[in-house]
View 1 (cartoon, rainbow, N blue to C red):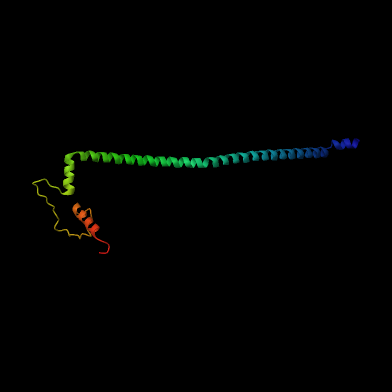
View 2: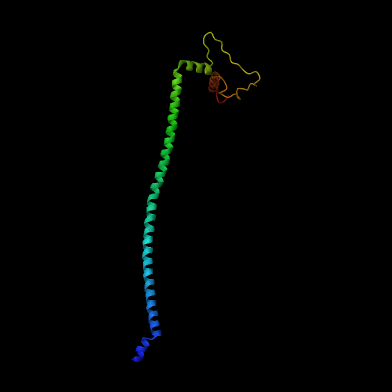
Length: 159
């Protein structure tokens, strides 16, 4: 037994026992780390799954929200443009309520003259006279457009 006790306390025996104990501790710590890693990986996977489901659940409502905000902004721009047009038309209506303005516009557009006045239309002699087909409807007096419309309506398709 003395040999066994001596062998037990020898340096080689103590180193072998320390190596085995260290190997056992390293193995246990590795399995604990792996267990901890797998537990964290499961938590991370669950967290990723929750975040992805939230993104998917909120994607459509957010898209709708952004789209509706853009529609609202467009409607407000249109409303502002229409209000400006209404204001412009109110101003024009107010101008037409003035008899002097109405008379001026009638004399200018329809070539009316007061009794006792002589109406003149000055034509530039240097300008080449375009044919009726070349002349636009806005370049001619209003009565020419009316008569052209009557002539077109009076014609039949077989003529």
